[in-house]
Length: 86
Image (cartoon, rainbow, N blue to C red; front, top):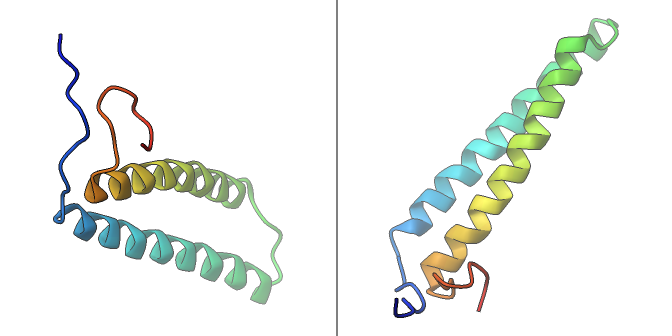
């Protein structure tokens, strides 16, 4: 099978990167407000708070990976064969 070569630039993908970034910061804002309200009420952190933070960290890592791949695809620097930045 012949190599496919680099992907062509995808300017529409920048919108997806922008939307993902906005929702990532919204999620972080809601987590901060949740922890702030716990502090104002002087209640200790519950297991649900720890799980929400852990879920956000996992989702953040997946977001970063998708964002880097999206930026690479939008700029045309992603290679089908190597699956890395060229």
